[in-house]
Image 1: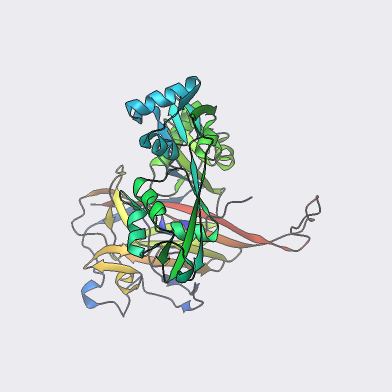
Image 2: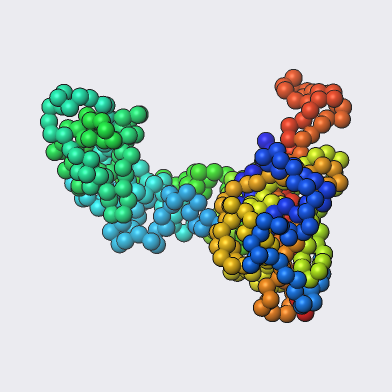
Length: 454
């Protein structure tokens, strides 16, 4: 199945980009047409935010897009929050787990801390080996139904009493009775305040209703046992894992760079087997860190990004180089989102805002003076016909030190496919026949622009 990152990626670029300065005309996501613009000098922009050309010398060194785009989201050492390192356990917890690994841990009178620990620790990792913990401790199944208050045999709790009972440290399980009513809920551990609530009350007032609840306890009885079973990393993290530690050094370097990137990462020459490994696995593991793996483009996309300097401002343009209409997805404002630059070689920080009046004109971007304080995490669409372009001009901060700077970002690209002959699938399934229409193709264009301030 082909991954379609089209709408999802728009808000996650390292240096998003900007609104519609249109060459020719384009259609936006609401169906309106944006007529030819003059590089972002909008008449409706407040006078105090209008662009002013800088007297500093600017030059574009290079602008490029990439054949391949991947996204590796850093998930730390535990992708799903289910693994506990053996070294992070307390001394008494380590004793229990070590005993379970060697055989089976048994106790006739399980203490409160053990019940809580077993409920919260499905997997333990020790020296690179993963263990699933299973136990025979009691479980509690809670069900509930709405009744008339007169039909409740015992005491009815107020909602405030219920909320206090389901609050544990800083976590509030306020939906417990809602789930219990809908489908029932099973708890591996009932903390003291919740246990007291269940023992004292038969029902509770819950959002305008009275919910009568019942608690069934299921357990094998003493002695309680806790066992540890060795499992693969895929079982522990809940998905297929590619061990990049075993890959060639060139591949490991690329994975590290992609993992450090804020958002998508583009490159041209893919090491052998890299893209297949990323496509075939949910996670990548490298140096003890897991990454969620996405391949967003595995070949050239007929969309280009160019950069020039005009009247002391940096002009970015995106062009449809193909022979089919394309739709672009970006953060607000179209077509690039909020554009930032950073010093070449600098991978940290948020960078410097490159200003356009389109920020102040957008109802999805918040500004303060000539700075952007927030932008909605939404995907805005722009449609480009073959050969059509969208452009915007940006003012470089007056206090930007001399040197080289980089603007990076990514745009979602979707094309409607038209089959050029051929027959349907050999297995007789659905698919494009001769002259038919293929599903829309979704991919990503990643761009990098380098400019100099003198």
